[in-house]
Length: 387
Image (tube, rainbow, N blue to C red):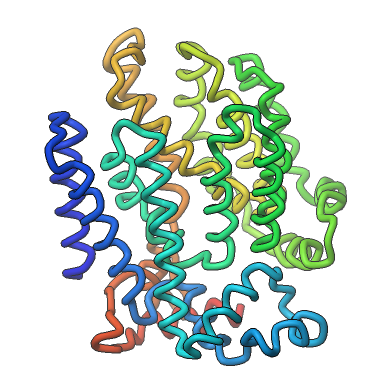
């Protein structure tokens, strides 16, 4: 837990001293210190995370550069995208140890992650603290190792997206898709700019979500049309087979759709400019589509960090003055509940007679310096994969 605590203390001081007090001295160096700390926390972990354990267990079967093409054409039964396999092959050709790959993976992730907030936010420490508190930082750094590369491409492309520079933007979209199929959402994001987010759109979206919620089986076949590659179709089939009880359906709808409505209403009613409309159209519509096929919820991974940018600006910037501080607080709480619903809401989801819980995916932290396995985490993931 020392690693988590050290990073948290550094972030809290950075938020207070640089974002809140607006001091400038040593700011860049201090930010770099936090970057290095984060890199060490993510790069030197030992069997921490959920999917990370499966990546480690399967790593020895993945190719180096000499066997890359043969694996891609003959043995890629999991349907991994060529970009990620090429990165793995590059790492294995230098050092076949999984933890060398993990460290280079963390270098790429942290470099792009910290650069993104430094470039696009006046409150970068607050942005990172939000990601820390809601576990987005650890989810991206530990869990979604293949998708992380696609997200990094989207972060690099973000400035091109804002400035409507579509040639470099779509080049980076293609690169992102080469790492993970979920990056297909990036090709559609420019079209979200054509829609103005208003309370009328909000109400219509909610009304549409209700028949989707209760008649999901009738819409799944239609949504499968959007899955254009064989790999996407296999993923879609897996997600479409996931079933919830009535209570589970209502709970998922509440935490992914309902809790976000106060914030969206506040944004539509009080927005100063339209440049974030595409973001909230995307977040809300994808959250609604995920009620039909839960896998669609992962597409929002590409939108969470731009949302954190907006949220940090919303919390500090006095131009976001609503009717009273109460309304602003309600909107902020709504946004926080939405972020909370991404990961923390699953913390006490258990399996094996509720003896092993999801929080064990992240806690306790173990380092490669000790190489101590956490039995609860290992058992939780074995049961999770066997479902």
